[in-house]
Length: 218
Image 1 (cartoon, rainbow, N blue to C red):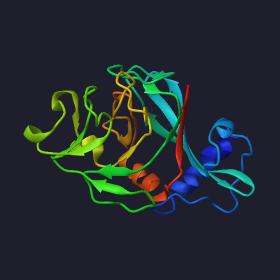
Image 2 (image 1 turned 30 degrees about the vertical axis):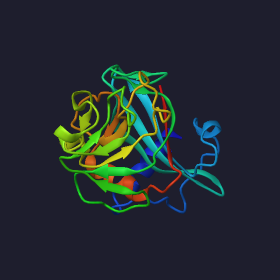
Image 3 (image 1 turned 60 degrees about the horizontal axis):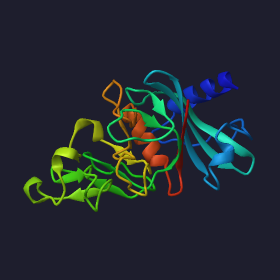
């Protein structure tokens, strides 16, 4: 199956700018994530291969089962690898199944089915555990923000040329981590996010629709 997926990825990467399941692609009726993703029809699978490296496979569910639409995408995860649960200040990528509610980036909207926010110097991700807006995007001038910007992240950085929010710690509990994104790689480990080449990320964003999830495992 791994050889089939690799050959299919080569075909997908050679034809166009968006990810589209080929009509003749071999369906997989029982990929590893299948019991855990509910009714989702689009799944981004991220499986660790050691250290801060992982492999990404992209699947769409059809009437005949799960079809691969891209496979073997080189992926970077946290500098501490993966962990069972997110933890504030610990640079590991949490394992589990996470929603992908909306996208953002410093670049213009590349298109696709998700809401997209183009960010600038006044866009922040609130990392202040004492703030009522902890683990959410906020827009404010640094001096006027109602949260501690020294504990937060300004979103106008190269790694966020394009990004998708990962639904980690949606309960927004202090200590359980925040600011987890699927974003443009800078070529190295992340602080707990998932990162791939920007050109491929754009293709994935153009393919994504509401209800898609990311499934992460070692």
